[in-house]
Length: 249
Length: 273
Image 1 (cartoon, each protein chain N blue to C red):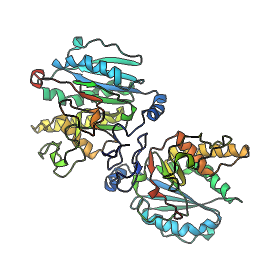
Image 2 (cartoon, chains in turn blue, purple):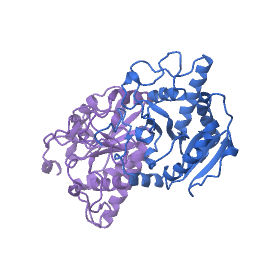
Image 3 (tube, rainbow over the protein chains, first blue to last red):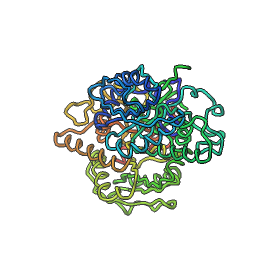
Image 4 (tube, chains in turn cyan, blue):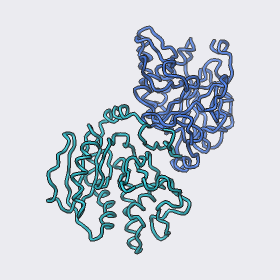
C-alpha cells in the first residue's frame, strides 16, 4: 500500500488491508497460545444490537481462535440464546443503568478497569473494547493483537489537526494543547494487553472523575480522555479506519 | 514518509529507513527508561586494526546520549587502542581464543556471544547489538533500532528477487532454505535485540552450526546462513534497512538516503591470513 501511511513516526504499524499476511500472523499467534477477550456493553435500548453484534463477531472476529466475550448489560433477561462458535465463550454480566447515556459510556472505563483486576487478567492475554452497535462485515484477525492498540476514527482520518475533535478547554483533564495530537482515535474499538488496557482505563476514569468534580464534561466523553491518553502513551499498533467505519459517512 | 520502499514487513514489523521515524518522539520515549545498550564486536588476529576507527565513529554516532557498553572480543588484548569515551559509556575487553580459519572464527561468534550473555552481559545491558568490527559509523544510529529481535537487510540483496538470495540450498545443511521460501536476506554483520532474545537465538544458531559440523558440512555464508534460516521461522520484530549495514564498494542507489554504518575498505586475502 503506497497510498496510505503504514507506519507512525514512532514506528507503530498502521494496519490496512494489503499490508500484512494473516497466515504468518496466525502462525505466530497460535505458537504463543494466546487468548483474547472482547468487552462490550448493551445498556437500555442497546440490547437490540446484541444479536447482530454477536453473530457477526462469532463469524468474523479472530475466527478460528479462542475468544471470550464479556457482555455487560442492564437487562440480562432480555437476551435470547446466542449461537457461539465452538471455540468461543460468552459471559453475560449484569450492570446498573444510568439516566444519561454519557454516564454509562464513561463508567465503562471504570467497569473495564475493575473487571480486569478481578477477573480478566486471569482469563485472557489481550482485551478489546468494542461498541455493541458495530457489525463486522469482514474478517478482523490477529493483525490487531499488540500491546496497546488504537483505531483511527474514520471521521477524522483526513481532517487537519486543528479541526480534530480533541477537547481543548484546559479545565478538562482530557485537554490536548493547540497544535498537538497525532491521530484521532475512536472509543468504539481499542484494546491491547490486559496490563496496558488496565493502565489506560484506570487513567481515563481518573480523568473522568476529576472532571466531574470540577463540574466539566469532555466534549466527546470517554473518547476525549482516550485520545489524551494515547497522545502521551503512544499506541504500539494502529488500526486504520477500515476497522471501524461509521456507516453514516 | 517513504513511499518508494517497503516500510512494514508482512508480519507488521517496521523496516527502518530515514524518513519513516521521528528521532525526537523516540528519544522522548526511550531516554527516560535509562537503558544500557551493549555492542559486541570481534577483533581477532589482524582485525584488531579496525577497533580504533570503529570505536571513535561509534562515539560520534551510536546511541548518543544513552549508556553503552562495548564488548570487544579479542585474542590479543594488548593491541586494543585506548579510545576516549563519552560519560556513561565503557569499553570491556573479552579475551577469546583464536581459531585456525577465518570461517571458524566467524562461526564461533554465536557461541561466544551466547556464553558471554549468560556469564556477564545479561546483568549489564537491556539491549545488545552484535556488529562486525571492520565497519565505521557515518551517521546516527539511535533508538529507532531498538526492538525485541532486530535483523538488518543485506546491502547486496535488498532489491533483488528472492530466487537470487544466497541462502544455503543444500538440504543436508541445518541452515537449508528451500526454493520459493524466504522473506528477506539478512546480513550477518548486524543483528540484535533484547539481551534475553539475543541469548535465545545465538544459542539456536550455535546448535545448528554444530549440527552441520557433525555432518561435515559448512553453510555457504557461515553463520549468516544460519541466521537467515532462524529468522525465517522466528521472524524479527524489527528490520533495519541497508542504511544500517552498507558496503562502501557499492554505488549508492536512490533508495539509500543516508549511510549510517558501512564497511571499511580492506584486502580480504591479506587480512584473513
